[in-house]
Image (tube, rainbow, N blue to C red; front, side, top):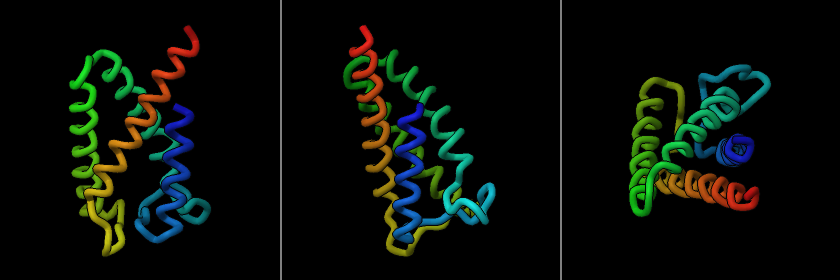
Length: 120
């Protein structure tokens, strides 16, 4: 969960710093340009749940699950925009979100499996 939180924080810092998106509604806006509630609480808890589900799935179902979650994240991101919680640059394409979450979840899941293998 630490890797998910750190990676999510650094990715947010990168994308916000390069003006790809911003969080108009966030905790402690005068201190943090990122949404620390998302990167320090929501993302790690969500990844923990996703990893538990991924451990129970076999073969191609894992990949299908990651694809479905990535599509859902792109849709939720679009909803967050309509609620004013999230603002993207004009040149942003939600396909970037889909691909990004596929890679992010895949990386965290691969790291998790590697750590399980290393501790046996």
